[in-house]
Amino acid sequence: MADPVPGGSRGLLLASGAGLLVAFLTGWLAGSTRAEQLLYLLVMATGGWPLLLGAYHALRESRVDMYVLMTVALAGALAIGEWAEGAVLVFLFAAGNWLQLYTTRRTRHSLRELLDLRPARVLVRREGGEMLLPVEQLRVGDTVLVRPGEKIAVDGVVLSGESDVDQSPVTGEAMPVYKQPGDQVYAGTINGGGLLTLRATCLVDDSLLARMIRLVEQAEKSKAPQQQFVDVFARYYTPLVVGGAVLLAVVPGLLGQPFLPWLKRALILLVISCPCALVISTPVAIVSAIGTAARRGVLIKGGVVLEVAGQIRAVAFDKTGTLTTGQPRVVQVVDTAGGDQRRWLAIAAALESRLTHPLAGAILHYVRQEGILPAAGSDYEFYPGRGGRVVVDGSTYYIGSPRLLEEKGVRLEAWKQEITALEERGCSLVLVGCGTGLKGIIAVADRPREEAADTLHHLRRAGMHTIMLTGDHPAAAAAVAGQLGLDEFRAGLLPEEKLQALARLRQDYGKVAMLGDGVNDAPALAASDLGIAMGAAGSDVALETAGVVLLSDDLGKLPYLVSLSRRAGRVIRQNMAFALLIKLIFIAVTLLGMASLWLAVLADSGAAVLVTLNALRLVRVRA
Image (cartoon, rainbow, N blue to C red; front, side, top):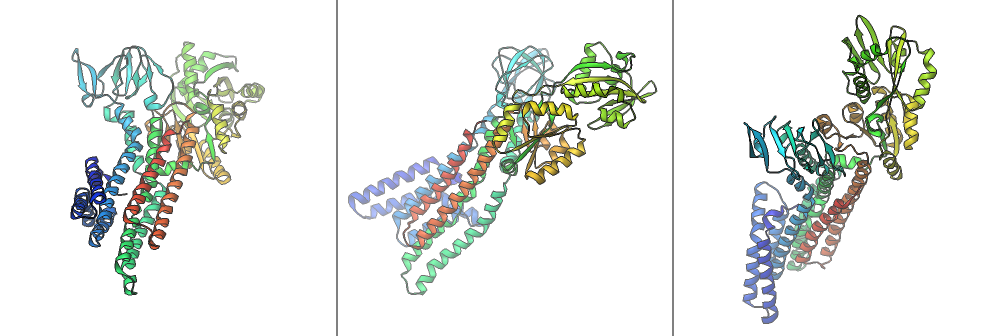
């Protein structure tokens, strides 16, 4: 694509347009005169100097681009006495470049909105007083005051005050989120009706908003496979057409044909030879899609990821925290040994306090409510996806799934019926055993997300196979799968078995996406064709590793991602086909002697503008 900045000045466009209009009127009223030719020359001088400047820079870098080709065409028009054609060529080139600049800026509108979210100044409490400072002067640990209705300037933790905070500019959440002391807030979000006092937890350039902007900028620079094809095509297309133009100017004359008509056709072919519309057909669509997705709380890590997202045919989900709320609660405790229940609950809490899984959080919440303190443990050992071991007072305890305890020699035969009944109710079980004896059973239940069933319905309508991969018991998984209408579920999986399940899905369906929290599911996300981390606004790991990050804890963003990526793929294919078709038509028309220089410029610039406008349609895609 020709750089629109040098020739994109509105002043130059208006000046050359006005001069062209006066020249036309002069020729119409007074006939062909020297005054008319001088006016055309003035138009070419006014609007043509950016062409010469651009051609000079291109030739210095040993490139043949649109500026070089247009300069040659302009010189040829002057050489053969086509003053009007040369003036129209200059004006249309300037107009086309200005329109490209305008429409390209429109595609980057969403990114500029992100840049505008952060306020320029912030109210800080330092040294016993309050001062208004540029946000760049904020330090980690500063106390920041946010008045009602103001934008929050930096990521932080609420120290005092309560308010509803509008997080939609950053995470895309539709409803304001209630914040109280201890809650996390993000730069770029908008305070509601309460006064908040925050402690800044990072520098401004390290905030979630700043990282989002950097990721979007990097993503917009990445190339999709279609763009790589276009780059290779353009590398050979332009020199071939330039060579064809030279032959078109020389060979007919050697065969006795008039020189000037064929020279004019060769100049027209030169104008057509620069594949501007084809070159920008892919990047404008990528910029438009990634920018508007970021504005809605969906970070897409580049053109390759966008293309893969449009090719997904199966989606695998983790259960806890993804299809369910991730806020399970202990619903039943069974003392199987008739001993001290508080004792073994304290031992369970000793291990769970070292884990981050939602089940661990549910157990710790329960023991705190019961006034139980975790026991003092040692020699911890953890078994991913199953549980762990802890030594308390010289005795070794295993805490985790029924499968783990059976592997460690704990006898469960007497409690099989109770275990099965709890699992059929959809409970996840954490068992506590010592030696061969079972001490107790903790039943934890989670509820499906409100939007999960609708999300899965939309994915199935889009032709996708939906499957849940979980380490939970088959009965508990079956209860959730039945409520949500999943196509399939696989339960009782260890982390490495999830990877095997993904490999089989890829064989059966092709491209597979995995949706998880971006931390516990990191291996599965990495092994899938497209890793999608949900609810990852506060997760550095997810922001860096997942291909797509859904910043809000909203499963409903997944159908939007699918719709946007598929439409982006269609727009890219439409743009490429249209750009190629225009080139082929004008090459044919030129060879038949039916084209003119100004019409070739109009077609080239017009095609570039049209593919950009087509890409802008992606901004209107809704969830």
